[in-house]
Image 1 (tube, rainbow, N blue to C red):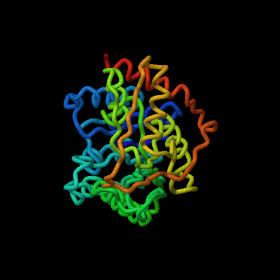
Image 2 (image 1 turned 60 degrees about the vertical axis):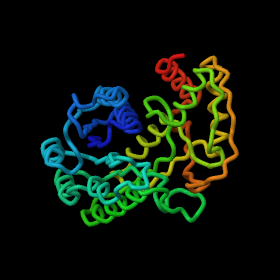
Image 3 (image 1 turned 90 degrees about the vertical axis):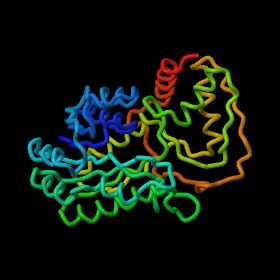
Image 4 (image 1 turned 30 degrees about the vertical axis):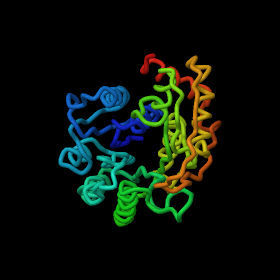
Length: 312
């Protein structure tokens, strides 16, 4: 298939582009900035990594004039994979929902019209299990944050307008991915402290979450996208390790300990504050054999990546 892909500079996006290309698809990846403007090392690394296997289009945001020109001049298209989203200050309670929705769906009717005229048959939108009414969990599945709210509302807008335009709409819902090329978050924090010889303290061990290897997630995404123009199931909520964050930290430690040669000590605090729902997870168990994914290799890749990136 010929795929128009947005959001390839993100952690999951670069992996999705790599896996789509490995499966034989032709991927045109759009990037919001000029190449020279990607100065932050990790982000630039991901941009270059994705660009190696796709046709990159720089200085191109969803719905802007350059994006519409890319649709009209670069077709015919089989599918749009809209993975990009406004994530500025996504952890903040002051995250601007209206600004995010406007960016996520800029000139949507024109985008869908031009895609339809180019032969496109479907749209795959990336969602998050932090949206309202996604996955499973506690507290009646509210949006976990304003960012989650913006993602849920964006999905409703896309579902409505793709239906009007006669395009198949599908949604791929992401849980908590981890692995190489990730921003410095939980797993990076774990390894950095261990390599510095510190006893790591996990302050929110009681949250039950769904952590998934990004390599497995990318294979699931590619398999899902491959059947979208043909219809079929319109949503996938791929699940990984469903357990408390404390249990996941112990799992991560047990896998890294022999690979990194560190003791990987852990201390779990007694969690008393719960600003987020206690339980949030995805629901679709993946057939890893059918996807051709190797769990041991995935752990090896993480250890190799972080072992090289984080010195002692």
